[in-house]
Each structure stands twice: as structure tokens, then as C-alpha cells.
Amino acid sequence: MIPTHAVGVVGIGPRRRGRLDLLRHDDRGQALLLLLGILTAVVAGGLVLALLAAAIAGRGDRQRAADLAALAAARAMRAVQYRVFEPAVIGGRPNPAHLSSQAYRAMAVRAATTTAARNDVNDIRVAFSGGGPAPTRVRVEVRDPVAAGVGVLLTGPVSAEAEFVELGVWAAGDGVGTYTGPLAVRQGKPMRPDVARAFDRMAAAARADGIQLIISSGFRTDAEQARLFAARPDPRWVARPGQSLHRLGTELDLGPSSAYSWLAAHARAFHFVQRYAWEPWHYGYVLNAGTSSVGAVGGGVPAYVPAQYVAPLRRAAARWSVSAALLAAQLREESGFNPRARSPSCALGIAQFMPGTARAYGLRDPFDPDASIDAQAHLMRDLLRQFGAVRLALAAYNAGPDAVRACVCVPANRETPAYVARILGLMGETDTAGGSLPVRLVK
Image (cartoon, rainbow, N blue to C red; front, side):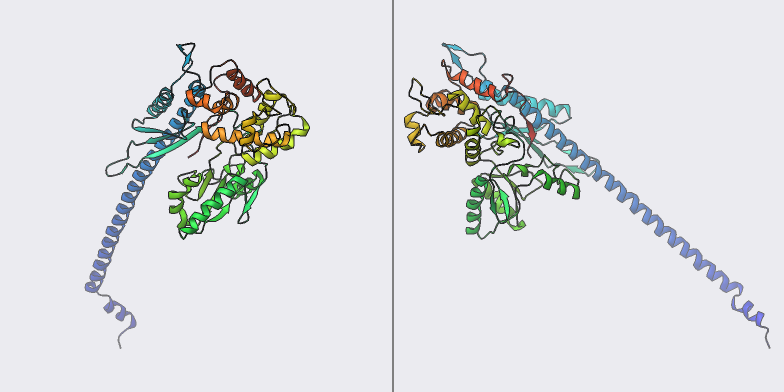
């Protein structure tokens, strides 16, 4: 009988114990190699991520440079825009106050270039949009590549757009507040009536091409915006209350995603533009740019307006998308709100319509103040579209479109420059550079 302890001794003799130790040693070596491999991969991956992060940060720096350059250009334009509308010649001599359209743009380019250089960017392109002799929107594209290490290079351009809005369009009490005028509804979503009509035309064109446009959002109050921001407090994706363009009644969020390429190709023909490069669904109506609010308080009607004309001004401003404050200042200057006013030149009524102009705008009785105010708003809407600037539109109302078209300026006659200055003064303009006009990034 073999003792039980002997079995254990035989089962793990010296030779077998050595083989087992060798196997364990090999396993440890393989595990070590595997661990080293994993560590190497982690280090390499971390290096790649660090390089990519540096490249992304560099792109962010370029975007900030583009933003700052665009804002600087818009501020420079705002400060001198009024000079473009000064007559080039007065009394047969060059007017030193006049600034040519070319010089106006050149000042904006210099401001953008200088600001970009201060932010270590040297290759930019500057473009203007909006037309007219003195555009109010500028686009800056930064083309400098971003190098963040060997093999990591970002070369795609980044861009930013900024604009300023003239006084008389965004006016005191009738400016960047929440739209309070009448609303139209499409697909259950509210919007400004003129925006709804434009959307109808665009939606019909899209249907003809086999695209069904869907509205996911339209006009939003500040309270609604506050709820959205609380749910996702990221200002890149959700604007803070009081800052969302949706409060103006001009903005639509459109879908489905299959419609994005159609919108990008065709929306501008219906006066809708994509507001932000990172939001292919967000389109804003820009035909009556800057006249989108009838005012946050009191419908934008100044306190000096007689009570009986407050409602007609609100209706006309909403119908024709023209600032109620601008219309009110005109009426005060034209007639002092006298519906029976007559001028030596045969201008009649509260808005001082000449008989021919009254007929052209379907105004049968210039002494009817409600009808005259509506026709006045209609005429001003047309002049703002035609001349693209509040000063020129006012000058055309006073001196006639032909006189303004001939010089692309406020004519240097005995009446018109003072007329324009007094109306802008009523609207809160405190200096010849245009006062504190809002300047903002729009894209």
C-alpha cells in the first residue's frame, strides 16, 4: 500500500514542476508584451486626440477671428454710411462730407483686415450683400490653414457675417423687441402675415418639385424661448430669451432633412435665407429686412401720436412691414397730424400726398386719415425696397424718386436735407454718424 502523501510527491516531481514554471514564465512574458502593446496604443491614440484637439481649437480661433473681423467691418460701415448719401457736389464744388460707395467698402475691408491680423489671421476675403450704394451686411471668410502637428492640418475656410440696422428701421420702441403685430398661422405655427404669404409661394414651388415642406417652429415669445433654453442651455443651439430671431415673426424652422438641399438652392428666390451655417433648417425672411417688429411696447407707436391715430399706425405698420415709429415721425413732420392739411404745392391730408401719387396708390380721399396712413406705409415700403436705405427713402418721399435716383443721395435742395434730419431726429438719432445702431453677427 502506497501512502497517500507519496502520491502527491510523485504527481509533482521536479521535472513536471519545472515545465509548469516555464509555462507560467511564458504567460507572464506574453501578458507583459500585450500590456506594453495596449499602453503604446493608448499613448498613440492620446497623441492623435491631442493633435486633433489642437487642430479643432485652431479652427475655433479662426472662427473667432472671422467673427471679430466681420463685426469690426460692420461697425466701420455703420459709422460712415450716412456720408455715402451726402451729395457729391454742392454749389459746383466737391462736397468733403461725401463718401463714395467704393471708399465705403474699402473702409470696411481695412477694418476687417486689421482686426484679423491682430488675431494672427492674414488670408481673408471680404464680401458685401444687400445691394445698394451702402450695403449693411458684410461677410468675412478666413482662409488661413490650421496646423497642429505632423500630419494634422485643417484647411477648410470658416466665415462669419455681421450687419448693422439703420435707425428708422429698428427704432426706439420699435426695434429689436418681440413682434406684437397680427399673426398668420401655417401648419399650426404662427408667423408674420407677409412671411406666411412668402412661405405659401415657396411651399407651392417645392411641391411642384416633389418636396413637401414642413414647419417645425415659427414665431416664439420670450417665455417660450426661456423654456427651450432651460431644457438645453447651450447658446450655440438654443438662443437665450430675448436673443432668438424667432421673436420677430420672420423665422421658420423647416424640414424634413430631405428638403435641405432644395431649400439651399431655392429659398433665396422667395426672400428666405439660411441664418446659420450649422442649422440647415433655420430660414429667415429678409425682403423687408429690419422692419420685422411692430414694437414690443405699445405697438412701437411713439407717445406723441394722438390717440385716434395709434390704431391706424399699428395696422399700417403691420400690413406693410414698416416701422410704426418711422411712419409716426413722418406724419408729425408732414402735417403735425392734421388730416385737413394743405400745402402750397397741393400736397393734401395727414400724409401730404400729391394727387398723382394718391391715385397711384389707390387713395381716393387724401383727407381720410386712416386710408392715408395705410397708403403712406405702402409707399414707404416701396421706397425702402427701391433705395435700400432709410435716408434715401425719406428723401424720395419728400423730393420724389427721380431726384434721389439721379444722384443716389439726399438731394442738396433747400428742403429735403432738413426734412430727413428732422425725422431721424424725432426717431432718436443724436449724431450724424447714426447714433447707437445695433451691430450683430447674423451667420
